[in-house]
Length: 455
Image (cartoon, rainbow, N blue to C red; front, side, top):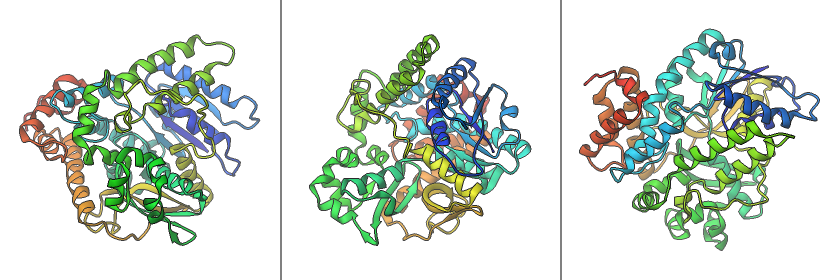
């Protein structure tokens, strides 16, 4: 089977390839095409993958290309992880907002809307190409903001597009392991949108173990215990997705990011420039070790502002090594492909069409909920409906997402201004309009969406 990776020169690619190397099922992915607009990044990543493949007799062959149509043609699965505007765009996503004392973050808040505005037209073009060149392919979307992008692409490809994020399943695993339990025997009751959800129950052999963790001192050892504090988690009686930090502690988050010497985007831009330069010059099989060191540094500084650290200054664990047994989103992607192609039924948390799952949201909205995946596709579970707080926040953010999609498709400044102004993390229509103007001024790919239109 053929897997196409869009954004094939990116840092996530080795995770996906390692997952494929460990897959012994049949049929399996034996043909991997890496597509990217940057030949140098493709060359560097191909070298990393070649070193991972060394010693594997049946390693999937790798083809690199800058031709999108060649990459897509005849694909069985498409893994999408692109960044329209590159890290330069991400830095602008952050700084335009921060200059107005508003959260600057790539998926949550106005930065995520700017990212969505410029990304949706590109992903819709890809969706049309997939429909023409690989009509039976499933698109596994990791391109952020993942829920918004998945919903836009579903307008072309329907349920053959699903979004993945490793944060909910990672949270469930951490809850089980913190209590010394086997996470493979756990079932997760989770509801939300991408980067906006809540773990409400964790059933282990039929027992909800979440109350036990909330009452346990080990709650403070959980990553979310560090982010939110034990008192707030106990007040809530559940564990939020870590990105809800930006809603529950918005003032503290903005202040911490403003006080840091660099944003997350600025840190990654410097780090990635160094990596691609060094890996090109490396000899003697050093590409993998360079990638692992870079990944460790990235992981150590992830959401630093929420963990009492300073972006770019958190020290990585010297023993850090990406775990091939889980591999985060790569493991989720492999489980999806195995379930669909080999009917290996799997339960996971994905971004999928709502249908009747969450009654407070439209039928065609994309939500992040537990599903079962098999050869027949994706089947959302019946869930307990979210409470008023959860449903209200989901509705407001979903309204903003849909306005953003509309603006990206039609070029409507009116819809874009409404999206920014109605976002719960933007407290003023005046600020909302300034945000839109700032992104149009600073990011060419956002300006291109509107083409000079005023309404």
